[in-house]
Image (cartoon, rainbow over all chains, first blue to last red):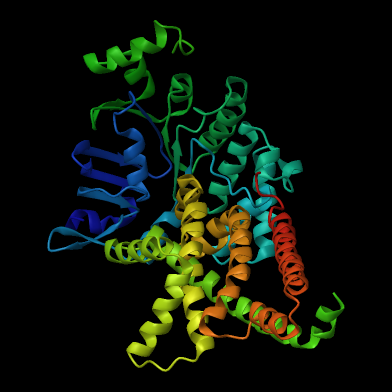
Length: 272
Length: 216
């Protein structure tokens, strides 16, 4: 951090992504990504498949490594320690500590199948935050109620529909009281009729304020209604970003225009 | 068959030895095999290389050869293991190699998303493996593990190669003494079958218990 930044440490962006480079072998997936997300901001990341948006999201909680650049969550460098201007791998404990602050909701839900819905939600707080069982269960029940699944606390994931599983997954992420919530195309694997219930929960979360959310999505109408900012990625870089109406209705670059045209012209999604 | 019954005390001594050998080898093989299996999955290149070589070589050898290698190899290097210890070592090396593959296969079949979800909550490696991965891999492992346990039980009969007084040895000894081969070997078949069947049933019961809640 620069001197100015340290003086105003409490007002630094919640997530800072600076010139991040990532390779999968020889495949250059992230080619210098720059992005800042302020605390409490809801940012939707859109882009064609292969643009690197999911990879970028997974770098924020270090499920993927990155080779150059910096990612900071609340001022803490993710995955590495800075040694003489270079990145040195951080010990697992440090990485785990940052991960506890950045909860992720996955496209494939990834609920723990051997645990009930309530146990899925209380598992993180009990094991990682060392919260007592009674307190964790009370909070867990509140969260399940908040996502509309109070009566499902004793159900196992294989007894729940996709939409219900995803809502439990959101409750599980919220239970960790994270600084940042990361959503990785969370409705893409759902049957269309179940998408709405999940987006509804996310909309409530976003409008209730205070939660920093980074949402990788294809749901353009959701981005338009709910996001504070929309970021368009293509070819491993951020191409355009701005207010939802600006980005989605007045694209400045040809690449974004081409990407958006696929959504309205082909009728694959609701018109923006 | 009366003659077999008359010799029941001596046969029981042999069977006790077999049970003891079986018990020790199953525990050692399961524990070591689990560690090796996790090493094959999560270890660095060196660990994985060594374990891979060990598993492939041992699984490529007949068990008899392994037993002879250990038994005569140990004495050649003047390591003073008792015959019981040598047969335990040989059978454990065999069992651990198979168990390592069982663990590697079943843990490896758990989707990467489970590890992602556990990591993203902030769990470190061992809590992840203990609370998320192994409970899911357990039911998957039970079938192959039960088969391995039955194999181990039958393989205890090879203790005869190093002159150990296991059940088969006692059956042979009494058969020769009484000159009643068919009766004794029929009895041996029945006893081995009953024991192996009991192991299979125990395994099936344990699998059912472990499956509570886990998606089929």
